[in-house]
Image (cartoon, rainbow, N blue to C red; front, side, top):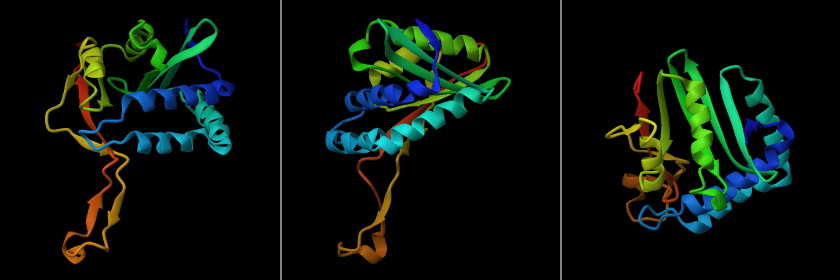
Length: 190
């Protein structure tokens, strides 16, 4: 069943979100370690963070240009989708995640169908890790295409290497655990 979430479900949704991240984003080739993903998502699961997620979801649900739905299977939250409308003909899928046990069951498709119905025929966009080919193929079924040259980093954490021999020249480096993403777009009418 696809339905609106209620704020009090935010901790359960956030735990699902963390489980999904832990199986989706680690990638040795891109330098995104399992340890970093685990540490990053552990920050979402503290008592304070989970309490804050309730207020965050309450705000999202009150926003008229926001679409947020969950999938429920056998009384358990199995996934969620969040989209926002920037203007009448421009929307963005902010995130769609399923519990790892639900991948391949059609739950994600039901969530995406609901979001795309809400978005309508206007332009839409989203970000995806370039190594997540399963997700890219999924989004392509909805008319999205990868925007060439759009790769950027999620969670960029610059730091200065003061230990290196050329610290005065190199200076700024990027944390290897920043997750690379590429833009995907769907043009009007697709």
